[in-house]
Every structure is written in C-alpha cells, then in structure tokens.
Image 1 (cartoon, helix red, strand yellow):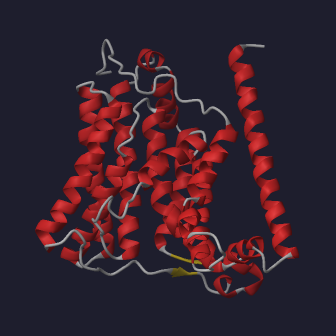
Image 2: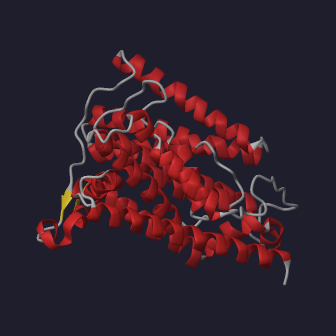
Image 3: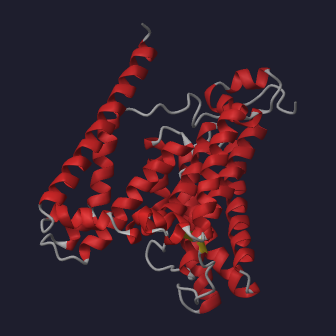
Length: 357
C-alpha cells in the first residue's frame, strides 16, 4: 500500500470518527434535553427546535458560504486567496453605496459584485503576472479594503456607517411556509432571496468543478500545471478566471451581507468581522468540496445563532463564554477531522514556455 493511499484512508477514518463523535454528542444533548427540559441541555434543544434559529443560521451562512466557494475555485487553481475578507468588505460597502445612489437593491448588489471582481483582478495581476507572494498579496487586499471602505463611507456620509437602504425582503413559498408539520424547517420556505442564491451557487459550483471541462482545468492547474500546459491550455488564463470567479462569488457574499441588513457598518473590523477568514476554515474543513464547505458553514452559523439565543436565556454561564462556543466547537471538530489535502501546486508560480496557446 502506498504512503498516499494509507494517508488518504487515515484521513477518511478520522473524518468518520469525527462525524460519528459529533452525531453522538448531539444525540446525548438531545436526550438530556428531553429528559430534563429545565436544564441547560433542555434550553439548547428548545433553541435548536425553533424556526428562528434555522432562519438565523441560513442568513448568517450566506456571506461565509459564498466566500468559501470563491476560495475553493481560487485555491483549486493554485492561487491561495486569503484576501476573501477584503473582498467581502469592499463589496458590502459598494453594494450599499450603489443601492443608495440608484435606489435599486439589485443594482446595488451588482455594484458590490463588480467592486469585488475589480479588486480580485488587481490581486490576480499582482500574483500571476508579477509573481508576488500570494499570502502577502492576500493580506494587502484585506488591509486595503479594511481601510478604504470605512474611509470612503466617512468621506461620503460623514461617518463610518452608511445610511439605511431598502432590503431585498423575503421570498415566501405558499402553503409550505405555513405547514406546521415541517416545524423549524418552514424557515427554508420563507427566506431572503440571497439564501436561495446561496443554495444555487453551491449546486452550480459543485457541478462546474466536477462535471465540466473548465472544472477539470481548474483542478489540473492546482495539481499539475505542467500537464495542463502540455495539453495546450493556458495555466495563467485558467488561474485568472478562477481568481475572478472567487471575486464574483465573494462579491455576492459581501453584497448579500450588507443589503440583507440594509446598511454598511464600518466601525472596528467592519460588519464583516472575520467572516472571510471563517470561510477559509469552512472550505478547508469541507475538503474543497462546495457541498462540504456549505455544511461546514451551516455548522458554524448554527452554533453562532444558538449562542446568540443562549445569551438571552440567562442560563448561568457568562455571556463571554457563550460567545466563544462556535469558535471552540470549530477548533475541536477541525482537530478531530485530520489533515486536509491542499492542491499540490497551491501557492506556487508557474511560467509556461508558451503560455499564449
């Protein structure tokens, strides 16, 4: 048995153990909550069974999941893009600004996407054409956006927080949204349009990566760019396309974040507040699979929604400890899951002998 095969089987075993362990822990919590409804476990079960918890989890998932999808395309092609946080920030501000100027929510959404794509294009030129260090360039993208968006808001509006704009509202599916038998899952049929956009993006991303020629090129660019170049496909063009696609998806995430709330908040780390970095954890946890990344995001978002509700329940645990529950759980699960295999050529520059083919 080869070392890589043994390592792969070991990772699968670790993931199986992590999955079984997580499900087992949830089963114990649910059993304890049913037996003792007045206990902390009972409070947790009650919160998890609420429609509002799933609704909040879905809303919180949108920017993280979309940014994670963008990160998958970029890194699968061989370009590590840790500037997803910056793309979310710049698109969140641009979406609100364009929506406020034009009065159109979806025009604002498009404006946010365009801003993110332009910034990702700058990043692509720096790391692909000028062969800059991808980590440093990604950090630069984040820092530029972190300074530029609040500064622009200060110049335009006189404060780091923008005025409120119209939100996209919700899409309600008749009958299903009122069917009591669905319990908390009714939230799936009464949600923001951006939630359904997220579901669509996850499905399309999986299909593109696994069932199309472009997806094969992206994977080859990150695993064996020389073989791709030998086959007559420009590695640089594939990587440019993948990075721009990451900007498009992250832009959708940032625009969704600010427009769903109807405002851009530029104080401190801005309203994005680390979601781009969580997106990186999500796609690593999901092993570069769009569906896995989405489920990882939903896990974190569900824990985040739960901790918010727990703070209002006065369960006897300091709120400071309750707030860190999502982060602690993510670290624990990551430790159990084992090593994630990154693309072989991720972070490496490639120069073709004839890249114009």
